[in-house]
Length: 208
Image (cartoon, rainbow, N blue to C red; front, side, top):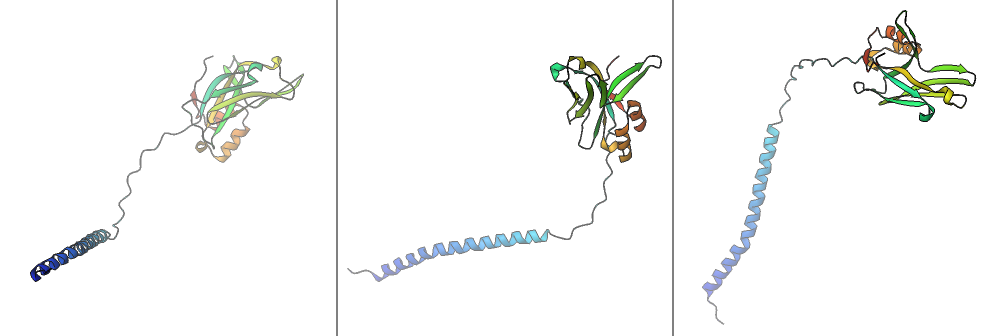
């Protein structure tokens, strides 16, 4: 079969063009990618100058509200039916933290001539014919527990109904170590008032 030489040249040229197109296209893509990367690095470096001077300190914000000691009252029943323990929720206006202190007092007496209430700090120990009993308390972040214990089996004769309790929350930031020691040794509510200079807010006071 005879093939025209001109046709052979045209066919070879087409194959050459087709084979070089992908190579030229790939090279162009690499070149564009290189320029984009170079421009990005240039812009990034041009924005990294020396840090300017620190600006002046802004005005101090207003002081937060002062957290002061707070007292709240409740009545507790220590009965056989509740296992001689009573739980009272801490009021919503008080937030207790680990380092804070909660004290508890029971209304022991009232002196009408002087219109004076006598509050005794818990624990309170009593001696009777059966042995020794104690009214005590503990607390968590959310409640105060008043409970009774004894060195004998508690019975109906040991029940208390309507014990008037006054709990006092003392924030740690309000007192010094010396005052904390004095509070732990105070035996009456009036002593606590003196130690805290009378700065005790009252919540949920029961009418009487």
